Each structure stands twice: as structure tokens, then as C-alpha cells.
Length: 147
Image (cartoon, rainbow, N blue to C red; front, top):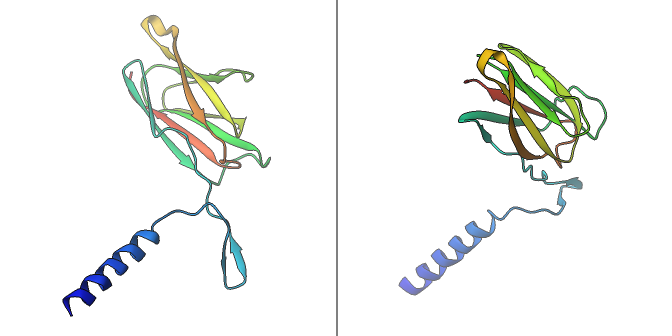
């Protein structure tokens, strides 16, 4: 009896673990097909000049109808002006308490950040990598709150 309970426990554990493995293939259910969500590789936060910029990703609800576009937005929640830019796109300046967005292709990008310093002069703070592949028609919101 103990041997069969042990075998049953092992079988249940094995089945439970197998059910947790993510699938990248289409799964069929009742005649319909479901495509598992593709992974998104954008960071959850980035550090710039000692500040932490929180990054929130939304898979849908972007403001740009083109299927290959992503809305990239910077929220300057307080402090001095901030700016962000991507190669091939004009940099966007964001005043305190404001939000500015720009459409970018759903691809990997290096996002350059600037922060106002002494006398409000914008200083280059370097680039951070954002991989926006698989985020078509979505949006990325960057919340930069401290100076």
C-alpha cells in the first residue's frame, strides 16, 4: 500500500511540474487555436544618474494604429526638465509634471536620456537598451520622478 501511494505521489508531482512549462506553440482547444503571448524584453526599470526610472509595459492600447509601432512615453513626474531620444528620431523634451510620447518601431533600440542640471542645462546621461520586439501596438511608459 505504501509503495502504491509513493508512486501515486511521484506521478502527481511529475504531472504538476509538466503543466507549468510554458509553450511557444499554438495550442488547440475545442476547435479554436490560441497563440501563446510572445515574450517582451523591455527592462522593468533603468538607472540614470542615480535616479531610477520605472518602466511599465502595456501590450495593447498604444496610440498608433500602425501594427509595427510602439508608443514610447516619458512621464516627468517632478523636478527639472528631462529629455529622451532614439537614433533616427528627434529628441523629446519633457517639462516637470508633463508626459510626452513618440511612435517608434517595434524593435530593439538604444534610448538616450538627458537630465537638467545646474541652471537647467540638459546633460547627456547615456543610453539604455530597450528591446520592444513583440510589442506591436503596445506602449512603454517610463516614469522618471526624482532629480
